[in-house]
Image (spheres, rainbow, N blue to C red):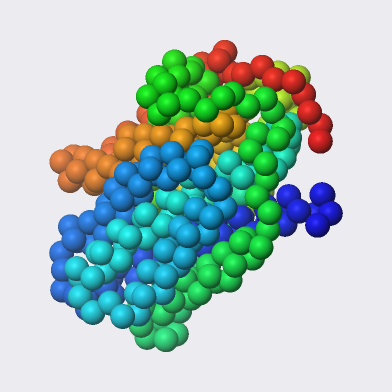
Length: 407
C-alpha cells in the first residue's frame, strides 16, 4: 500500500469508529424516557446505566493499556470493537432492566479497548508536527458522534416505534469497520521518535507521577471533562426548564451548535496548534489553556443571557471549548515515550473520568436541588473550565523538547 495512503486510510477508519463510539454512548440519552416507561424504573436506575458504563470503562482501561504496550495493538482494538458492537446489537434481545444494565456495562469494556489504544496508532502513523491536526480529525468523533447519537436515537425510535432499533443501527457498522481495520498494517511503535526501553509497571507509574507534562495535561483534561460532562447532560434541561423550549427543539438546537463547532473549531484548533508548535514547544498547552479561559465568560453569558443573546453566547463558548481538543490530546500523547503510551493513555482515561464526568452531572443536579437554581449549579462547571485553562497554561513549562520531523 502506498506510504502516504496507508496512514490516511487508517486515520479515516479509526475516525469512523470513534464517531460510532460516541453515537453508541449518546443513543441512550435520546431514548431514556422510553426505556423508563417500558421497564418501570426510577430516574436513579436510568442514571445508573451511564454510571455502570463509565465505571467498567475506567477500570478496564488500565488493563487494556498495559496490554497495548506489550502485544499487537490492532488485535486488541479489533477485539474490543467486536465486543462493543456485538453487545450494542444484542440490545434487541434485552427484555428487562438488569439485562440492559449488564449490556451497557460490557460495552464500557469494549470501548475502553478501542479508545485507549487508537490514539497511539495515530501517533505512530504521523510525525510530531502533524499530530495536532490528525488527532483533531480523530476527535471529531466526540461532537459529531454525540450529536448524531441524539439524532439517530430520537429519529429511528420514532420511525420504527422501538427504542431498540437505534442500538442495532449503531452496532452493525462497527463490525464492518473492524474488519477493514484488521486488513490494515499496524504502524511500527515509535517510528517517528526515540523509544525508551520497556519498564516495569511500577517504574512506569512512578515515572508518570514525576512527568509534569503528563500530569498537567491529564489534570487539565480532567477539569475539562468535569465541566463538559456535566453541562452536556443538563443544558437540554436548562433550555426546557428556564428558557421555555420543548425538549425536541432544545436537543436539536444544542446539537446543531455542537456539530458545527465540533467540525469547524476542532479542525481549526488542530491546524493552529501544529503551526504554533513549530515556534514554541509549549504551544499545545498554551493555546488550549487560553481557549479554556476565553470560554468561561461566554459560558456565563449563555446561562444568564435571555432572548436573542443566549444562543450566540453559547455558540462562542462551545467554539472555545472545542478548539483545544486536538492540541490537548496531542500534548498528552507527546508527553510520554511510545513504549509506554498505551498505558499512559489508560491512566489518563481512568483519571479524567474519575475526577470528571463520572460524578459531575450528579453534583450539578444535587446543587440544583439544594439551591433551587440550575444556574447556580452551573458555576461548578464554570470554575472547572477556568481551572482547566490555568493548569494547561502552567503545563507549557513541562512540554517535552523534541527533534522536528516534517514527514
